Length: 273
Length: 278
Image (cartoon, rainbow over the protein chains, first blue to last red):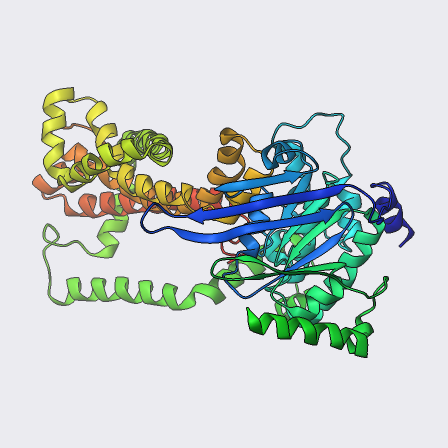
């Protein structure tokens, strides 16, 4: 346990003050897919400010473009109009500078690589200066609770364990921003609850800014410091609200009146979308 | 877990550990394969019985016992003709697959190349190999070259098709991951596309291992004085049927041996389950 905390403390200092600058700033973003004639508008005039160190969960009906927004921040989608700034730079610069890491819905591990080799993949590829701080792969695996499974191949691990490896791989470059696209969506509820708690612990220990896409209202409220709700056709911002629940949050909090009041409010909003 | 496995094998308790290992291996092989062993033994026995009962003349169809003796009498001839065929099949296997792999890489990175040359590959594939043999003999003469080319051609197509599919098998999410990591094209190739293609490649190589022997033998039928193919023709024309049958058994054995070599390499290289994540 002390070892795991030690690994975490080596990362960035904890900063959750709202006065900090913005980690991700999206202004009047439009994203359209397809060619002229059969054009499809995924996002229309989306503006959002994510403060540094914040944990923002993104909710919305399917097809509202929440994944597209996340992928646009990660420079995986072409922006049609408007601007995105990641730590004051365009997404491409931020990607090349390894300012963010991405966690996909599927663990997306390379099946021929052991857990430890998957975690160290980001250190082997891409241009990155040797001066850039990186973490030790073994420490990262320990941080996500997989000490002793270093040599295991992905097919020897459970779905939850594979996703833990993916998170360790994302954290190895010590990104300032973590982009997570429904990372626990394919997991069973018990595993998901456990990983939710651990993600909160990681967030509080590392001070990383997290953007987290989910389709579960309780997950969005449990994790989120802020909830960004999008509505569909075309995708646009419906609501950006602060979740007035104290950290550290425990799973039992989901049974409190306050928690249920917030989820009920979001559910009502979601029905309007 | 391991205790249970050992317990079941300790039916034969031999004090000498090494002997026990060998006995276990033999018994284990027998336990796993006894239906096949009995079936093969039954077929051979039936063959012997039919030849004896109907008094089939040896030149028409030799009995298993006569084929068995043919191995002893013609051991030197069989061995001398096995080596050239093995060499041709091996070189054909190497060159045919190498060209197929390189072409597949080109196709995956250039759709123009794929559109231009894929149809030609299909046309070459559709020419009967036995019709191609005389053409190649006319061009390249009677040496080893046309045999290697035919053995290579026969390997070429399955490997090309599988390798193209394999190199495209990397999931979009994996490619997104590499993009987020700002990986270069060559890093994507060596770290993702190539390893992802290996299960597909080995599936093709196992087919190629057996068909390369077939290609070499067919090529040796056309005006060759050595090799298992030439021996088959010679034994047939001289009514040396036991030798003919022995040659066929050797040829099949060669193909099976190459198949197992490729399978063994595959088991060492591809240790993962390709669809662990899907």
